[in-house]
Image (cartoon, rainbow, N blue to C red; front, side):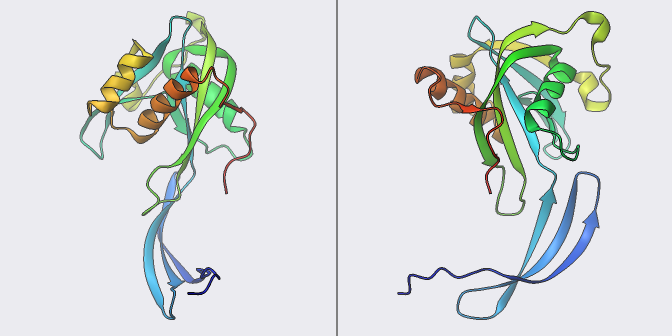
Length: 201
């Protein structure tokens, strides 16, 4: 067996749909052994999510309606990385303020994840936010659409991990972020990466 890895090359690309957040494309890709295969995929702008942990060891969760699954899900404050050139930590800070009315004195990277690499290149960076303070009432963001219906709760981190393991929390970045936060806490925060750590790939 050869030790040389096959190089997958895109021979052609056709855009099927282009929107503000993602585009759907069909690509002809070279396969091992010769020949090509068509792969339909979603190219996504990417996102950030935030595990906001307060001094009492509680995390801030939101419950938000998601049309693709037709129900409300427990999630982390999160948003798209759709501002060209913006540092992901800056995006995370804005989403934290807009969705749950909090600012943080410290951001660290918990985990990076490809949310569903079988069909999309979406990359989500999950931050840990600590040293939380409330956004003053007069400076709070007006929420619209699904965000107008947000429920915001604080729950003990270990209880939230229990909700993950019980199947009550299924949002991918929320699952990854909560499990990573619990592990990082148990390691005395020694496994955290700096907020400006380079994105993978």
